[in-house]
Image (cartoon, rainbow, N blue to C red; front, top):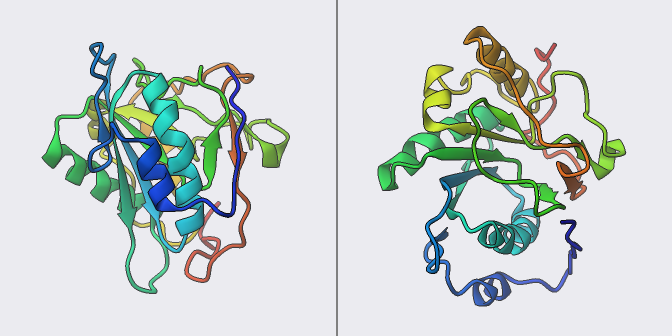
Length: 217
């Protein structure tokens, strides 16, 4: 059910490592059962070390309680060019498949922390949107058709829509584009119940290099 989240300013990476001794190079496989799915978590990242630490602190035990075989990939954009979340996630998908034939991919913003263990990080027969609500929106869907924040697609679903568009620089637009790609393939977006698909958004100011995309409709 619901998990109590904490965001201690004293948290260090070594604390996360010592709390997750079963994790090797970001990967975990349950020793006492067969995992229901193999899942790659892809996190696009730049200048968000504190957010990343909080997310890893909560996400590792969350995924282990769900008895998943998983690996967390952090895809870091170097340099000062405008941030391109979509391109980073496309790269992450291709790189992760070099390690293992993952069945399921979770595309995960760094500043969203899941609040409920029943929000299962597994893929479905249709593309799945996991963020129905967050604290910043009063736990309501941001807008009808919203498909951003945290999404889950199988390897084949992502291939069928030809991934994200690489052309969205700056904040916004790429998630709506992905929704349209999904709809064009006659797939339907599914969501967990609203009382389960809840997230805490760790607040931050918008970076230089991640300004709102002026071409976003």
